[in-house]
Image (cartoon, rainbow, N blue to C red; front, side):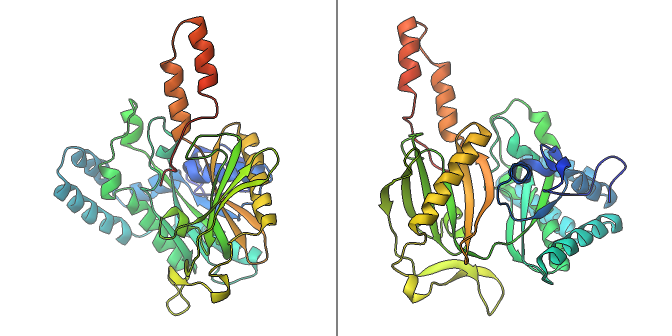
Length: 364
């Protein structure tokens, strides 16, 4: 189903999804990874076009612009009030029938492909603004895990739309000159089949502490990767040589709790780790090797250091959940180039002194 010009829903395995701005930064990257043959769980994006259509049809588009404009110069108490009031309006507004039908049929297709009714999915925000130079909205938009049934999917799509007007987003002031691009930025909502992760985490195609590009660093835990990404669990850490794939350093963390689905409530939270796993590494040597080689292939495909979220299922399948460029060391390298000395000797020294030596922390 489409508006007059653009689709409401776009699957990440659709050839048209590659490089499509309709999927925002996060889901656009997953479409690229899917087209390149990497193992990405299937899903679809409720496009930025659908978001704008929803605002227009519900009569909230002008209010959205007014809220953004007023929040720019308001104090925190007023921003919180604006956010709460408008978010409640968004979450309570009806999804237009044509858009609702498109979401329902796309979710039904995922169920059919998986052979599972009420298929658990992740519902993730994927903003246009995530790709703007000088802006980093990472960690400011919403993700909801283990959502089951199309009615709950529709509810959480609206919650992701409402997240565009959370206090952190309304008060965020990026270091960009293209303020006009941010004034009316849109959002895609990705709906993606959940991986029932035995282990999950993040990996970097450089050392985030030293900036050393000869290493792959894998951080992982038992259960869902939310434990690592959200900081609720201290991960184990494996530093792997990018050429030999030898594990050159291991930092193992015993783990008694993990993020997973509470069987009693069906809600994601901290649950006990089986006792026989408390002291065991969350990854085997074979899995570490597979992840490091996967990271190197992704870096080669994208042509720059990457920050990658991954999951390993109970039967050992490895999946790519998110891919984005590593930004902190890239920014430092850019600053070094701008500030490089002008003499010929200085240029040579600057070229080599900035290679493989610098440090970063993963954005939230």
